[in-house]
Image 1 (cartoon, helix red, strand yellow):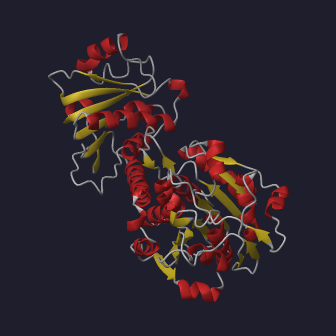
Image 2 (tube, one colour; image 1 turned 30 degrees about the horizontal axis):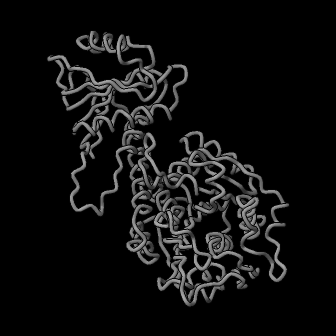
Image 3 (cartoon, helix red, strand yellow; image 1 turned 90 degrees about the vertical axis):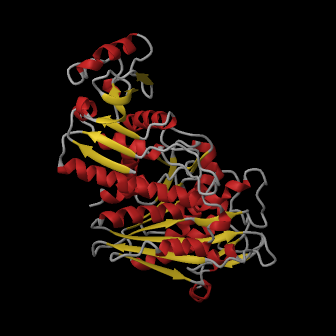
Length: 483
């Protein structure tokens, strides 16, 4: 899609449709800017339009304007305006215009800019909302917008903001595509090949194969892969834009999760292709950081595997030895994500990181607690956790801190091993994180559970049904604001 900034008045530009944002019950802004529209705008406010958040109204375009349509878009009350509300409003307006067949649209930026907000938020909401996954449809007759023009005075700062927005949205699209791809077309091997496509002058990719992993003693991770004919791939993606201790981001990368011998119910199992959402997010973050060549050092780790039933599959009751030497009693083979993350966290310590962050679709308990409204966060580093909270508010991918009480360790006690991999349903959100803490120990570490937010069963304002791509914007903002 073509994105451009043009320093023209609304009355002098030409395209299929013009979006005019409005605050609630405040219709006078465009009276002098576009005098010929004033009468229709006032009439709309008297009847069907008030400027409430996400409200849209299409009005007739006078002959002196070179648009087919003009769309009024509500931002809500001026005193309550936020970047998130701007994103939501733009998503609603843009999708409306797409659905009625508009191809080239323009956005009037003056009202938003004069309120102290960047028009890039409006563009971000528009672009994020237009995502569609049609790869497997033989006949794709979907309607698409081809260009978005921002009507604004040009500035270098705005150009940089627009460039950054496009790169971040592209990364979210990339992640959504990966998560939406069915497991037969996204095996661990294929995920490794996609990771290698990110290599450039600042980004290197290393893939550890099964013999390497056996030699290293990654028994916890390897135990998950035993039921599958697909070999595991331990993918390491390093972006080095500066010689500093790295931030290590580990993404759960189960490309399909049947639950193993502790088999999941058949209803809804088709969604288990999204159990690699954490790994996809890691790749998306590094993709965006790399394209902007930021002065940071990030190492992404994706312990990729399938979790299937097979004659060699790990059984409940088995004892597994992890990379750090700890033994684990398998209670449930459907508690597999933590098994892969445990070895990855231990391996990440070899890089002497400033912080380790793991992001994972880890527990159903997270979905029960938060639905799809927040990411559960636990960890041992208050400093970095506070920064993540701020980033969550900045981009509206909110995180909510849950306790990492020492009592959670009681759920993980085993009679015959150092710990067991599941403590049952009671307290499972916290005990699952505490299992990972047993491997992080004193290294600064944060766990993000995106089980409830990685996938949507229905459309949200700028997140279409299916893969959300959540976590990319959160972690990108976090990394940008590290000092």
